[in-house]
Image (cartoon, rainbow over all chains, first blue to last red; front, side, top):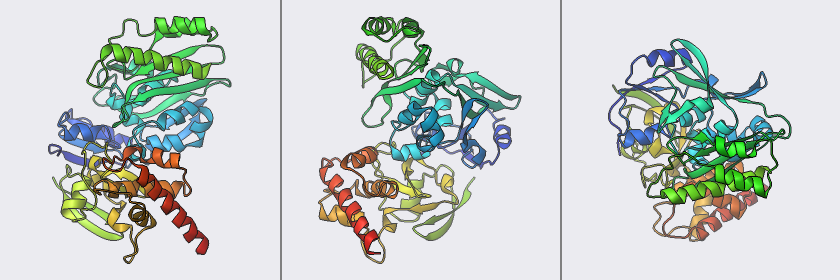
Length: 277
Length: 161
């Protein structure tokens, strides 16, 4: 499979990337592990690719102002191996290690994954559960978009055509916070047939996010309300499972039918909740 | 518009004008004639096209040749030295780690990445590391043995020198 023709420009700064985005027919190329498969299938036919792989500032992972800041061009492997992440966000380490395989993790980036917004991608659920903010920059300046407002539909996000993601910012979790990511992986691609990320804070506040289940990753507020501030015991666990996935259009495909995927999602929510108990 | 790339492949420097849409695997196979790197699924699932770019295992069916500009690349052809097989190649031969052999270059390149990070892997470590490489013949059992053989060989080598 060969992509259709396109122009190629390699940039070394974010400003150059934004300037190059002034044309609607342009796409950002980071690791390419979401975009290149789409180009090869000709699902995407941009006139030009702007390669941001050379912007080293976008690869940084650091702690800043009470937040963990992950540069958009950090690869899944960079995140998986990073001590700061292992110390403060161990469920990100765990989640990153389940993405694709080592070859994919070596090249795919967190920014690329969330900009592409594949309905089965892992990062969307993880960053939703972690109360992350997505930092973007465009011709009219910088802004932060809450993860809960970022994913708007199938492969659709709140990102404007002239904006690029520069970082993902996660508030440093307080002591006693527990998180986990439980996923049923498609055995060839390792995309999530269902993925469930749960973060349980010391005060009992519980964030629950799903990927692979609907058109886009989402927070399950019904299940969260059934548990937040309450102990995770049999009764509350059952209430959370009953409350989960209400008003959610569950996707069906040749890997998993709608009823099967709905069932799997609850199985994995249960596993996740037991993990953070 | 074609773009000039300069790459070092198995220690040899190359410079070519390429179309931006040229995939790295096709650059290696069709331009450099290094046909040990295979195209299997062509969708970054099967791992037959695994090479090392700047020392890291990469599926080069999902990489553009232009992205490799300035990079150091190692393919299966670059593993042996002066006709001596790399311990992984020897392991696959000794432990019957291949049948049809189509997946073998990718298996070996991924295993080489693993051994760089983890010189004494457990069987579980090997199975986890090779999850992005598919073999339809062997059932993986002898592939795992081959990697264990190579790890042992490399350990002996490290002791001798």
